[in-house]
Image 1 (cartoon, rainbow, N blue to C red):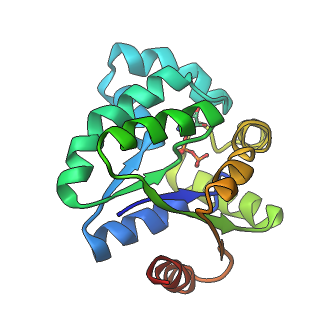
Image 2: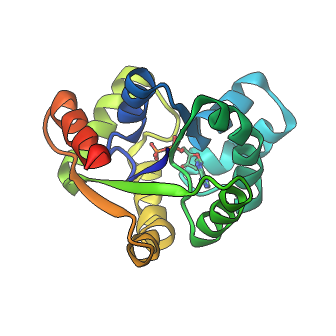
Length: 187
Ligand code: ADP
């Protein structure tokens, strides 16, 4: 089963994806992680996207679609993908639909983690202290939130139109949120 974990920066997509990898054996496909890996490895692509990511802007659709496409065979072999931080624009979502249609394995559900804005800011501040990610500064976070509101939020009507969107309360402990996600997936 292929699912998308959807939500603003700091909503807990990465944390919850990792839990689903453990419990269900699916593969987590995080474009944010793939791009950070490319930077760490110092590849040409990594160098190209570094400034964009640090400012909190979105990298081009073409780049992330290619990264995802490369990993689809692995997800298919595992029996499912958890898309995390992808798609982030309507063209990305349309491309994903096309790629999955070729493999006859469409998105089953889009789980939207709903978290208060104040809580998002608090979580990102905490992560900045713990992990030191370059884009967890106050300024970059504002740009990321704006990118989410302008470019990613239009996916809510997109997936509502496909009857796939399920809202899950993302407030509370990690265990509470996991339990809600599992209930939504099994419903
Ligand atoms: P967040 O914690 O904001 O969800 P991610 O780790 O998913 O962050 O992404 C970090 C950065 O990587 C983004 O701000 C953006 O620059 C880039 N990025 C990740 N995924 C995408 C995507 N699907 N489209 C465009 N840019 C992306």
